[in-house]
Image: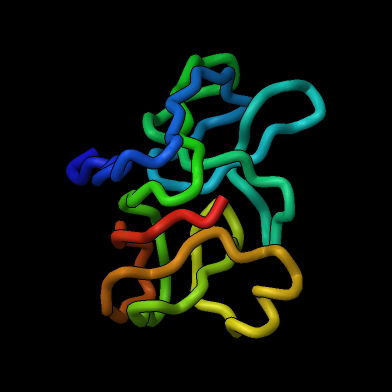
Length: 132
């Protein structure tokens, strides 16, 4: 991947943990632990994401690394308009998008705070401060 995922853990309690992929997983995307103990991209409005994929996994059964922890600054896969300070929620395939701050704060589905401006419909990496 051209862009590094981990930008700065800032002394935060970040952990890089090994997991087994349940399917092909792309670095920089939010992942969820499934009932079989494997990780896959998080789905829309996921409440149970465990972190961000640090490395790619080509297929089911591959070992991959996941970054977890609050306060970690990561380059995360996003789509749409990004504004600094906005809360981000997960959409399909572990990609984050801007949500309504008040709704996200109450629902527990915000995973990051955006740290960069940008617009685009393509999936791209943007610097974010992780909330979980």
